[in-house]
Length: 230
Image (cartoon, rainbow, N blue to C red):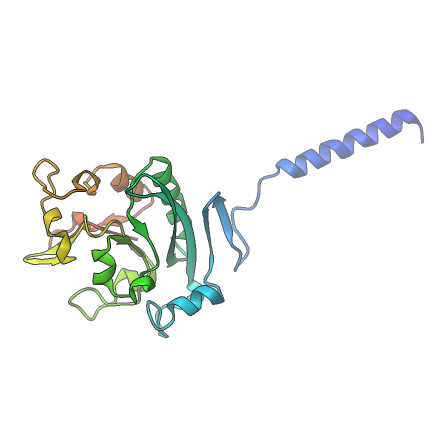
């Protein structure tokens, strides 16, 4: 083979390799595959180790939602102390991509969140989790004061900084230690973290709305300031 032909072949191979390297990766991951969105941000199936932590707590055998319909999400976030922390959530597979994108944006902003732990840390007790100001998502439970399943039971809802964004229905306030934050005007609220309260039109509100979520603070019959659902 002549030297000129060798050079041509080498050039073709070089171009082919480069094209392969820069070719876009399919946006649709294989079923059961963990998706790494950014460093520290991923979502994937609920594996055996996570399953052992949630069975009998946030997840109970039922005919409405299967474990393989849920995704385990890892995120980074900026704590109230300004330090970077690692958090974990469980959500429905339908919103897993939305959630990692939203929390990546919140981390870049940066938007302070006190804690992001699976609600199983609090034995799936919503009141305990809210009192700790823990941001969480999946919990197989009914709507407060109802027998109807909550959107949380399907992994289609998330509560952000719930103590400073309480659930308010008449005289009922959840969590009880969030009562100072029922006053939503930061100029009048006496809560320490009043500047972190979610407000209609603010960065968090707009971000979730852009991803197709509705906010409980917009509801007429009650106000659930912590709650976003899809």
